[in-house]
Image (cartoon, rainbow, N blue to C red; front, side, top):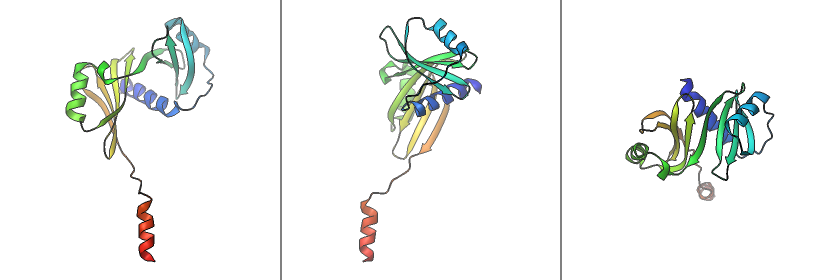
Length: 165
């Protein structure tokens, strides 16, 4: 369960905090572990999430990546956003076959030290948002479905008010 929970929690909290540029105090163990794993990295920022820290960085002008560490400095994995053409065939086929009526909002690849490579897909349907965690064969290890709140059009209350008068 921890293998699923850690990347899912980290991803959701990272997405929730991504719009806030914050300075985070990083424990020395975490900073040292980052420096050992990612020499020559161009640092963008650190985000503290529950009992861990996430570093967003780039190396040699390549894509931005997120490195995940526990507060003790244990490296948990690295992730980055991808496009659908970067997904393994099994994952593409699963998404197309079972979720073809959903719009793909974003895809994220996570390479964990314990669980290996997995993919997160945030999808949007007409009435629901869906978050999936898939392995590299397309097996869905985790899913969460949230209902999209419908907002009434402004014209509907106005029309009802006019009928009363």
